[in-house]
Figure 1 (cartoon, rainbow, N blue to C red):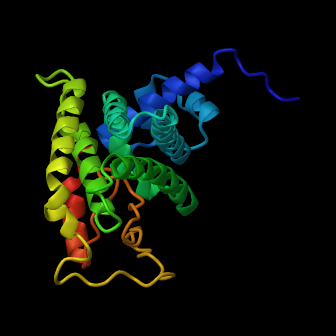
Figure 2: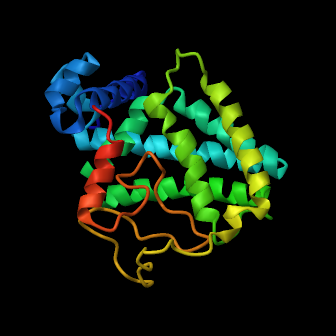
Length: 267
């Protein structure tokens, strides 16, 4: 006969998940044994195993919930069918509101997704693509004369980079709030794209000098690094800036490792 769950089972499970993600950010996923996680969560090891079968299961559920939440919130904004520029502003505000309380989740997405099994990594990446695509669509809709198939990826990832890396430096208790930063980002971005209508953004029609051409369709990504292939013009890359080991693809292993080190935060 199946064991009956306590009425507060899901509440306890949710609390343990939050505490475990904070522990991952604090001590690092490789060092976070189930014993250490149990202590961090204030439960016994047996209790922790009652709710989660492994630390891998904890990590996957945390990142799955987080990326699904981001995607769902942006889809809700788009469903409101706001005027194009109002929609883009609402998306920026929504992201910043989410990031206000998601430092540990964002750190786990940056540092620890590589520890997941391949099929789980692909699920997380698919959910990141939902977020990236929502932002890209909104930008293109808001600035159709500035944002083209040739520069859509650059513009999208630049905006996401601006807001996503706030998890690493913007102090919730500092002089600038997340709401204030959102308004500053909206103003900077709106004015910048307006000014760029006849400026340098229109010239982004191909890879910069010296860059190797993109892999042909059907070529496999670099399995060792976990990088996705470059996006074609008009396509947004599949990873969020601040949530990938290399938001910009590097050409050598040395460069890739350098970029990983540059964005890594201490757990």
